[in-house]
Length: 437
Ligand SMILES: *Cc1c(COP(=O)(O)O)cnc(C)c1O
Image 1 (cartoon, rainbow, N blue to C red):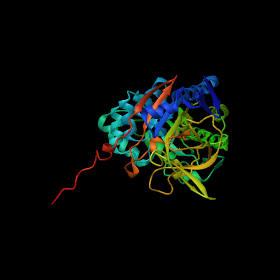
Image 2 (image 1 turned 90 degrees about the horizontal axis):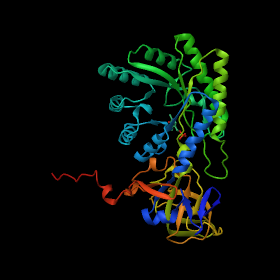
Image 3 (image 1 turned 180 degrees about the horizontal axis):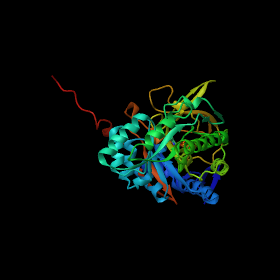
Image 4 (image 1 turned 120 degrees about the vertical axis):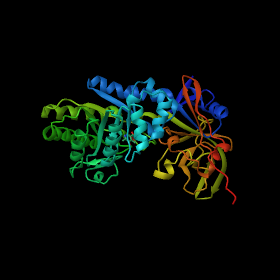
């Protein structure tokens, strides 16, 4: 039996549950720091996205942006759910290949893909390459001519819209390292080059306007700009773009201060806008693609840490130090990201202190969360940071030569290890001794 406290499930022992598994048992079995995913939450999010498109009866594709969390088991899970995925590097693509993911369902992003990466993608019959710049058109022309192989491509464009949480702006985004600028005519020039290149098969246009977006206006504006481009290209180049890909960026709730719109609100608005513009201009309704990352895995992940030292500065602050930190979750240090935390073995105990959770890394900025209201704690307690499933493990580092944590998948009361914990010997695995002369 379990009850819910906030968004967390709790069992009779007063312990946090992740996918029906006691988080304290997870910490004992796999040690800490540990990242535990509730797999059913990932599946539910995907079903949720699909249901919206299905009920709107439009052609669509959901492509998981795997940079949010990419491991072999994750690609396999995404494949079980039969959606597409995006990769942004040869290493992610390699992982998808190793996972047996169907590579014809992979889109390849990046503003500086190397020749080796593109070649690897072509060798594996990549689903689609999302071309970012003129250098890439040239590289792909050479590579496809050499192998006499056609490839589907999309063009990444910057529609001049950028969105940040509750705001959007219509000028800033032109100044971006990604994509072809529409306003200055770069996008027009790029599509003409691609149409004229025998082995490149243009199938769509792509934009990505930001991340952790809460405001719908940015997506609507982006949809308008993209449809305008479809119309312009039909008129100018007699080319009607079959796919409009609006990227990801759907915001999730990390703390009570944040009240993101449900994905259905964003997606319904995007669908309605695209339909409206297509009808008005006598365009075929394009296939609509989205690329959610954070909104698929963020809320499914929990980071478990063991409490160690404690420092109280009277009248200033209480610090609670845990056995992880910026090496397994750099978002608080990098972006001032906020999280909520609980004490996994004391879920039913009353709040007794306000503490800030410090990591173990040698940086003053290595803080995981500020001013958390927690029950009384002592060394050995298990702190759980909630909603850490996106851009935590995928940004992990070995700073201070700390091994990266293990990752487990939990579902229906069972857990399985999906990434082993690194060991100290892994820290020197690539090192070579000094050659004495
Ligand atoms: C990062 C990224 C995404 C996913 O963004 P989220 O905020 O995680 O949804 C989608 N598309 C592109 C091109 C990206 O770079």
